[in-house]
Each structure stands twice: as structure tokens, then as C-alpha cells.
Image 1 (cartoon, rainbow, N blue to C red):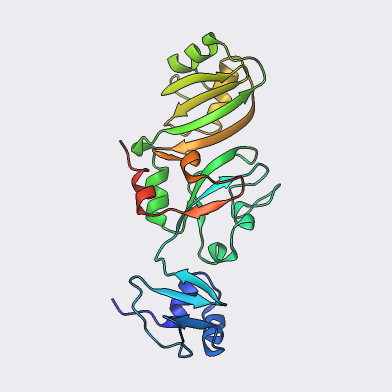
Image 2 (cartoon, rainbow, N blue to C red):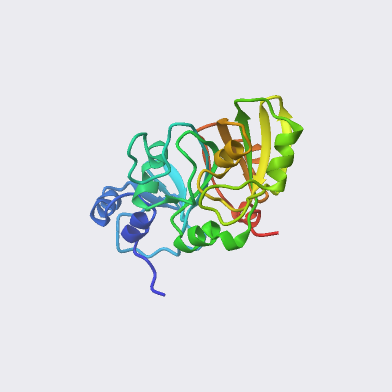
Length: 238
């Protein structure tokens, strides 16, 4: 595979059009190993490449895999309709790189959201065949009861679903708080299951996907981080 020229490298990392990236290089804004590079046709090895742009160090990433602790009132869409889109709260490079959410969280649902520019990864993580458990914490309008927990574990019937849907696990966290683990990922599933069981979801937060948890990542609302190989391994099926 032919090596990428430096302008194409910058373009691939989301720093703008190829023409703009050339201008950045020719203006002396890019340095590699401490040396300013002004030749946009240079072909540095991308394996382990780090470079400095505007005095900030960057690591070359063929693809980006990130996790966001999504705030409320943010839409998981590149073309939002009623609320700001999720890319509006992330660095502009991700928009240039065509980063997309992996699946969806409702605009009022908070918590762990995966995003990437790797189409194969997005497809694989979104596939129902992977059976990756997802953990949610729901705040309920009415008190949580043992009967509610039992119903969710036994399965409830939802409209347009051929059979009952059941939680993998479910437990009461507080008088109005319940933890639910699902693997199906149906539309509005937690909210619809709670409604079918006779309660109402007034707030919802996703706290884990597979073995990847927000607690371990220590991300505040609106914060994000890159997923490194050890994080990605936690998303594999058990």
C-alpha cells in the first residue's frame, strides 16, 4: 500500500480539506519529531506517527473509536431536528472524519455512547447477533416494587414484538431507581418495558456496554475519551 503524503495524513485526521492541510504544512504549522516539515509531499511512516499541529501533539489514528458520556437534550444524529446533534459537542475533527454514533440514545437519555468512523466496527457493534449486554439505570415515576422487578425478568409484551421481552438481569437500586440489563436494543426498549409493566420512566442513563463501564472511564457528562485496544476488548461478546 503506497504511503500517504503529509497533506493526506492531515486530511485523514480531520483537519480540513486537502488544500487547507497543504497550506498548514507550507506555513510551517506542522512538526514531526520536533522538526518543522514544510513539504506536503513528504511521506512519513504512519505506524506510531505523532506530529505537532498548532503546538499541540496528535497521534495518527487510521480510525477513531471514542466513548462519550452523553448529556441530555442532545440528539444522536448527524442531521438533528429539535436539539443539538452529538457532534456539536465534540472536536470539529470528528465531523470532518465522518464519525457517527454506534446505535442511538434518545435525546433525553444520558450515558455511555460509542462513536467511530470505522464502518465495520459500527456495523458489528450494532448487530443484534453479538448479544452484547447493555446496562441502564432508570428513574421511575412510581416506586419500584419486587413485583415490577419480577415482571421485567419474566418478560413483558410490547406492541409490534412477536414475543415477550425480558431483562437479562434487573434489580432495585432505590425507591424510584432500577437497574436493567438488556441485550436486544429495541426502540425505546427500557421505557416501553417499564410502561408495559405498569410504571413510567422519568429519566434513563446507560452506564455500561459489555465490560466497558462509565465508572471505570471516570467521564463527567459531556466528556469523551479515545477507546484504546484494552477498552475495545471489553466490548467483545462473552
